[in-house]
Amino acid sequence: MIQILDGFDKMDFAKVTEMLATAYWSVGIGQDEIVKGASHSAIVVGAFADGEQVGYARAVSDLTRFAYIMDVYVDERFRRQGIGQRMINHMLRHEALKDVLNWVLTTTDAHGVYGKCGFVPLREPAKWMQKRKEQPN
Image (tube, rainbow, N blue to C red):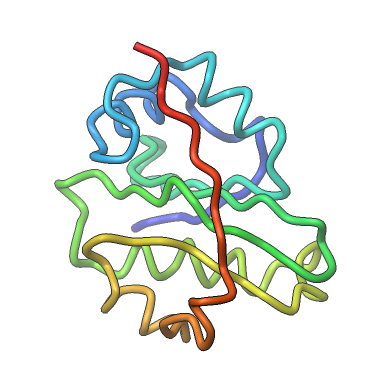
């Protein structure tokens, strides 16, 4: 049975680091950076199988108008069981984030997963801009 929990103190950041350090968007990330990001997030969510953390996701937000979901990861052994969707829906329904009007995320390969949670492509992508800093070596 998979349990979905939220809260900084409930996360196994050593395990989260193992997972995220292999993800295409954060190869080699260190635990210090993961903990710093989590501590500045509005919510961190984990999926647990018999006490072992097998999934992680977080969102940064002003708790009113905007939330950005990021670092969604499910251990390969537990994929295709709806765990990612459960973590996303947990955030979307969380009491602390109930007033958020605009939820966004980026994905390269999980459009189907997020579509099942109600996400659609941006209505007006031409209005969005970004400034990206190169990763230090």
